Image (cartoon, rainbow over all chains, first blue to last red; front, side, top):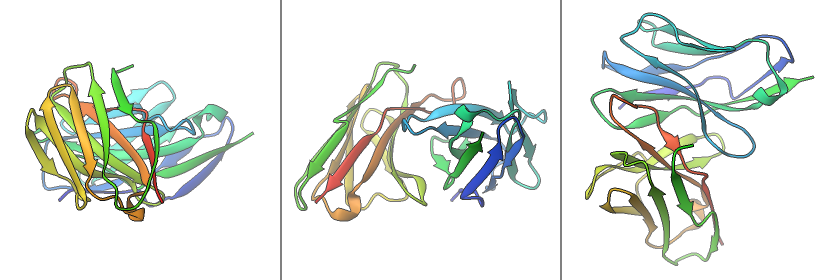
Length: 114
Length: 113
């Protein structure tokens, strides 16, 4: 079974600085999707960014970018110019393209200090 | 926002009673999921569905059952609620390759006393 591991239960960053959240996963598949979700205190799950495994180019969405290392099975999220509104729980998730199961990591609680 | 509605949003129930949570979607997505969220565990998959009447177990399915008689509705039933099932429950939907990311409902906070 696929597993997703987030080794940093908590992280903090100063406003306007850059922070990187780590995620590793285990799979024998070659084609899959990876995601980062954000969960603010409202509890709503919000998609931050998506990466297709067959694409070598790292995905970017405004201040959010990923470092996808397929051979190392690593998928980190970089948040640039951190804002107070970025404070949230962040979840890494994995999904096979051939299947329907969506597997999440344990989450990283990000605090943004003013 | 994706059209996903969970009901109820909050529920307190007694140990041993049956409980049913409902997830309703208006997006006609094929896949539907039930997760539970607990501190330190992230989101854990309970059951999921890949079509009407097609369901499968997730990693924490014991004590839970599901049904999907229509594309738009996915029900999660706790046959006899226990205190260990106190949690926040999320429903999610997704499509296949064209739209692989999952969209989530607002969550249901269930307390079993």
